[in-house]
Amino acid sequence: MTETLEQYSILLVYSAMAIYALAFISFALDLARRSSQMKAAAAVAVAPELVGASVSGAGSAYGTPASDAPVDGAVATKRSASLRIGVSLTILGFLLQLVGVVLRGIAAGRVPWANMYEFSITGTLLIMAVFLVVLTRQDLRFLGTFITGLVLILLGVSTVNYYVAVVPLPPALESAWLVIHVFVASLGTAFFALGGALSGIQLLQNRREVSPKSRFLNFRLLDTLPDSVRLENLAYRINIVGFVFWTFTLIAGAVWAERAWGRYWGWDTKEVWTFIIWVIYAGYIHARATKGWRGSRSAWLALIGFAAVLFNFGVVNVFFKGLHAYSGL
Image 1: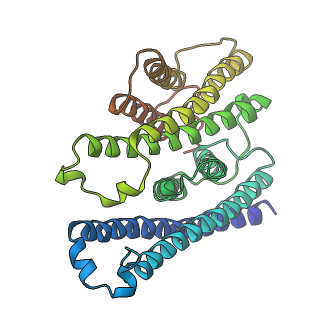
Image 2 (image 1 turned 180 degrees about the vertical axis):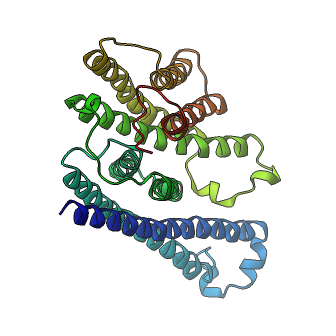
């Protein structure tokens, strides 16, 4: 029975990856159409007299080229359709992955985050969950390509390199703190991923606004995205939520360490990197709130923080030995 559930679980994870790949394509098509639409609009702005000359009397009477309406309308409809399809596929992939994670937990008879493979499938599930929840409050569908792409890469690495069969928990992990500590850490990571994506686009948008004629950043689709100030504010708010969860992760980890090993802090590699991440994001929030850091400096700090999160997850967990070496590899 356990092996059957385990097989169904991995099959559902693979199915979710296939759906995410289709969602990635849909979101990418939307970005491509945004760029094409802006190029067409720029061409019209450069040579309006050519457009006016091709319009019949009825069209010009309203001051709007009659030939533009169906073209622009078609592009907007296609773009909207791509976004709707991308979001719908993302939701479907999320549901498939959710069932796969639940089946893994049922097969193991515990929460499914006791090794690197289980960390990966649960963590990426939460990244998708946070993305979809935030979409109900803010229209961040333009991040779909980044989020689905990141999740695809993480799931691909985990299923190929990290997969292990269901095994019993090590004695140190047999605690309710496993549920609390790891879940909150994964939730914080999900918010940091979303904030990192916004900060990355903010850097491009800010550089483009400072040097609008730069040929290296002549991406027309940036015209359709929020300006750098709006992106920075969104990233800041999302990173603050992630920082709150990460602070609780640090505290909960110390309490759990005292229960398991009789000390709150032992300078274990994992503990040190968790603290480093906390310091980076604390510095980011402090610098932006009190020192007036705006623009590219705050974005770079956020990206450095997210890079530290990825290093902590993908390198420290796998290549460094210590009391937290529960990768299962």
